[in-house]
Amino acid sequence: MTCMKIDGKAIALSIREEIAARVEALKEKGVTPGLAVILVGNDPASEIYVRNKGIACEKAGMRSEIIRLPEDTTQEALESEIARSNADGGIDGILVQLPLPKHLDERRALNAILPEKDVDGFHPVNAGKLLAGEKTVVPCTPKGCMRLLAEAGIETEGKEAVVIGRSNIVGKPMALLLTQANCTVTVCHTRTRDLKAHTRRADILVSSVGKAGFVTPDMVKPGAAVIDVGISRVDGKVCGDVAPEVAEVAGALTPVPGGVGPMTIAMLLENAVEAAECRA
Image (cartoon, rainbow, N blue to C red; front, side, top):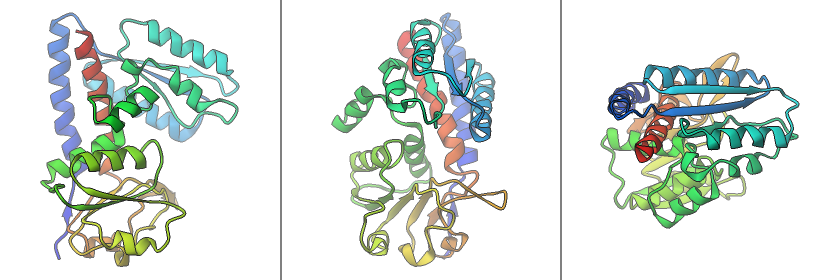
């Protein structure tokens, strides 16, 4: 069986070109979209993510403000920075880079962001609207996964979909979006019994576990579309949840790197531009 590679890098590039055109149209109206990214501490992986987001903003013609706070920042100081960005009329989107140092309350920080500036889609107001099927800010990674399925021409209507992972960031919103796309959805997690029995039924399988090679060929229905959200490092090499051998069984597969990752940043930019268009 020939497995189609779903090239997230190429798709994201096309989307970012569209975003750049939208930014230019906004600038003609006197509005420059702005994104503030708050980074607490010196986590190397977070530094890379934040730098990449800043570069992506600049390439799209957007204003990018990176706010760096020391590791020992207090909850009050963090929320003060969020409040400052909330009040800044030139900032359309605010992102708090996760994970935060353990002494900080992540949920409190995310809830302090104005819902209309919550480009990650994590605020309870936006999460509630997504659950209700209302128009809202959609979390970037699940939104990117849905766009990959659409761009690859993979039908969702009436299909069996399985999501491995139930995080607020990926698993839960992913399940909601697939349900809204008329899939029959099963969410699997650490307490799921006989995981393979569920995944083998999936026409669309999404894995967001974060364990290299977790999904093996015997877990995949022949011809299934497999979306690999997981990222791990093994001997310095970036790996996904899905073992390379799955390509011998699947009908379509996102690579790691070059699959979901580029789409997450593209969706972040799109969410920020949509917020700026509302301001305009």
